[in-house]
Length: 64
Image 1: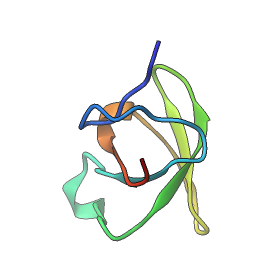
Image 2 (image 1 turned 90 degrees about the vertical axis):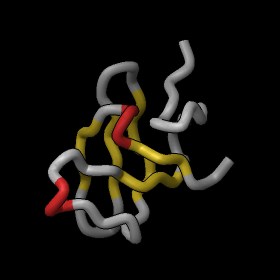
Image 3 (image 1 turned 180 degrees about the horizontal axis):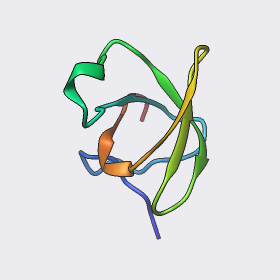
Image 4 (image 1 turned 120 degrees about the vertical axis):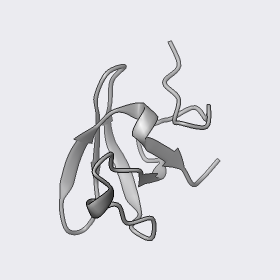
């Protein structure tokens, strides 16, 4: 099964993404994350500062 972002783009380990954090006060659309681990329910993303477990529907893929 293909895992897709909020716009229907297929996600893969290594893809660069923007995280649309559901808590609006923490959203930062300029922050670029990389997918580290991929599963159907939870995706692990990281950048040079931290990592987070997120839902695929919260991501927007940057590289095609």
